[in-house]
Each structure stands twice: as structure tokens, then as C-alpha cells.
Image (tube, rainbow, N blue to C red; front, top):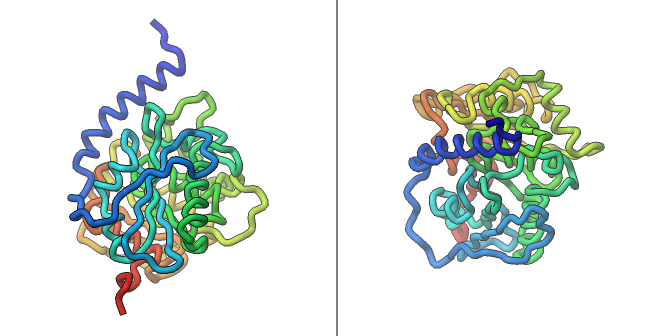
Length: 319
């Protein structure tokens, strides 16, 4: 029996999920002890064309104009699961920033990073819903529009790339854990999965990758957000060549050389490259983890992302 393109896509997605979910079972660090603050769902936050759910973590202590971190989950996950299984909430308690956890409701539990709507300014889909979430916390909680950041794992890392391309005027920086370049997952047949991209078979020159980002918001001439990239060399779900293509893309978008200004090893099996600067907040920072598969976000990685964003100031309330 010949399957329709849509049935083939669903079959492929199901196969991929079966491979991803066992890997992600060991991804997360042990959740920190619960504080009095709690994760809450926000029901009405604004335009939401793709039916995302919004979960918000508000620490007990916040500065007057807190920063915002959007933390996006992996395929098959949810906002609450990502909240419980990552260190971002405990870091928010320490440093005083808001955490927004968007949560997918479609069957795949993958963010839309492939449709034409998702890949252009004003197109709608998941990026528009996340933008509305950010606007909500700015309006209701007095968040600082100049300090909005995004991070994510796997599908959430892909969304990080997309959000920085579609909304460069909203996000100051992103940290993508095991993702793919902006536009790499693009499809036109309604499928949410691009096997060629996932397998690392989509290549382009740096200017061509950069142009995909610039075409998402034609005419934009403002400052572009910085990008931190993480990838395991043995990633079997979103293969390592995607890391190389991401570096090509974001060094071009930010107008810096692809020759790193500094290379070091934060850990024995990590190689870190800084492009366009040698300090902790270089325009592009890329960390390759030798011998690591798709199961990222081990202890300490979230803290390095927070440091890259500049959110690791003195603990909130400290002198």
C-alpha cells in the first residue's frame, strides 16, 4: 500500500519520537528543591494562532524591571516538564528573572519551525504566540523589553534559531542546545519533519544561510541578537554537521569572521569557540561536546547560557 505524503510524514515523526524520548529520559538534571514560587499557566496572553499554552515562573524576589527568559522544550515534551527537568527556575530564583515556558498542543509536541508562516515576520504560527507571551510579561509584570532572551533544547533549539531570525528586535540573545540553522527544517508539504536537515545533509554557504535569516524580516537594519550554540559530536537525531552550518549562519548574520578569536576547553571534552570577540559575551559562541549524543543539558550548561546572556549578576536582594 502506498502511503500519502502526510501519512509518511506522520510515520517518520512517530519513528523519530520513539528514538528521541528514550534519549531524553536521561537529559535532565535533578530538579532543585521546590520554593514557594510555583509554575502557573496563563490562559489569556494575546494572539495565539497555533494554540500554544503559556506557563510562567515568577520567583519570589524580582528587581523592579526583571529580565525575561523564554525556555522552549524538546519534541514530545511540554512547558511543565522542561520547568521541572532543567535548572532555569533555580537560576531565576538566584538571579531574579522571569521564565516563560511555551508548550505545544499539537500531537507531535514539536514546535513549528518548518512552515512558511513560522519563518517570516508576521506569518503567525508558534513564533507569533511566543511573541505574545513576551508582550504579556512586559505588560503585566513590568519586564524589561531590553533584556529578553530565549533558549531551548532540540525542537526548542530550532525555535530559538527561528525566534532570533523573525524577532531580532525582541530578543537580545539566544542559546540553542542541539538545534539546526534557521530555515534548515523548512518544508512546503505540511510536514513538520525534514529528514535531510536532521541528518545533516543540508549545506549552504555562510552568505546563503545569512540571507535566509535576513529574508525573515525584510528591511530590518537594527542590532542583531547574539547566539550561543551547543552540539554533541555524536548526536544521532540532529546530526553534528548542523552545528557547523549554524556557525556559518550566525557569524554571517552578525557580520563577524568565521575564524574564532578565542578557543578554549571549559571541560576536558568540550571545545568552545568565540567569534567576533574573546570575552564571555562574544557575538557568537559555539561549544562542541566530544562523544556526546542528543541528550544535552547536563548540570552547569544552563548556568553557562545564563552567563552568556549576562543574567548571572549578583543574587537578587544581595548587597
